[in-house]
Amino acid sequence: MIESDDFVKALQDIGFDFFTGVPDTILGGIIEVLGERRLYTPAVREDEAVAMAAGAFFGGKIPAVLMQNSGLGNALNVLMSLNLIYQIPSLLLVSWRGFEGKDAPEHLVMGQTMPQLLETIRIPHRTLSQETIIEDLKWAAQTFMAQRVPVALLLKKGIVKAVQP
Amino acid sequence: MQPEEGVMQSRAQAMKALLELMSDQALIICNGFPSREAHKLCEREQNFYMIGSMGVAASIGLGLALAQPQKTVVVFDGDGNVLMGMGTLATIGALQPRNLIHVVFDNEVYGTTGNQPTYSRVVKLDHIAKSAGYVNVERVWEREDIIYEFKEMLGNTGPSFLLIKVNEQIEDADRVSIEPADMTKRFKTAVTP
Ligand SMILES: Cc1ncc(C[n+]2csc(CCOP(=O)(O)OP(=O)(O)O)c2C)c(N)n1
Ligand SMILES: [Mg+2]
Image (cartoon, rainbow over the protein chains, first blue to last red):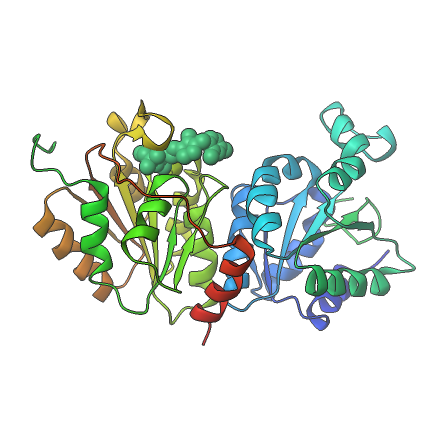
């Protein structure tokens, strides 16, 4: 498992300097480290977070939004009618709850359909793996810069160390 | 206190009065007719016209205000928009961006979609902003007060919340003609040093 500290450092090394979002247990360790480094601005909804990240991008920041995949549902309209229309890029760090149907019932539909959902709305995405994590981050940053769209990195349980097991 | 009939401004009149007081501040305008009217009244490169994403104009303003703490950021919002993104009042109240002025043109209706009443007729948005922690909160409807309070807010430390009660009159204004992707480029250039 990757230490949250190393993961945040990799994100910073690649240029990300504005972080917002709504917590999930899978993201807890990352949010804790971001908080310690005073890089994280908590949002109350994921669509608010995506819009805040857009504002930060206008102000010269390279933003990332952390959310549970259920939050993707909350953020959908902003992603489609703001980011994708105005060509405002953002890194979406999305925890993949309901992966392979092994989770609480409320996560199962989104857990199963998320990749198709992202493809339908044309948001490029990759699933982070421990072996390719640096490559994955590079790909995300390159796609962010070149295509000026939101780019999603999907984070399954057990890749980056969480606060709670 | 409730405004009397007749003394209330149209949103376009109130908007014009504010725009005349602005210089290089960044301005984000919510979707619907507010954006169209601002576009017709005073086109400037520091204007960001939001055409979709109802409810998040203030969130965009907040992100910009945090990224550029030296820049004053003004948001022109609508009552329907604020009600949709009401959680953001809490976020702004908690984060206390000193350089953010949140103006709400409150016509008590979803004017753009045909004047269906909103809850701002009974729910006091200024009271909510005050409870959330905005530092300066004012409720105005007469021209002199609108000008006086906005001037004060431009000079003071925020976050500020200016609730302007306006009538339902809509200005005959076309859709915003600027391509959204072009708007991103020019707005980003205009608001970053
Ligand atoms: C998510 C979403 N729901 C509904 C609409 C339709 N819509 C466009 S503008 C608007 C009303 C906005 O109300 P308000 O902020 O009070 O501004 P006003 O129209 O009164 O000027 C609505 C409901 C929309 N654009 N997006
Ligand atoms: Mg209205």
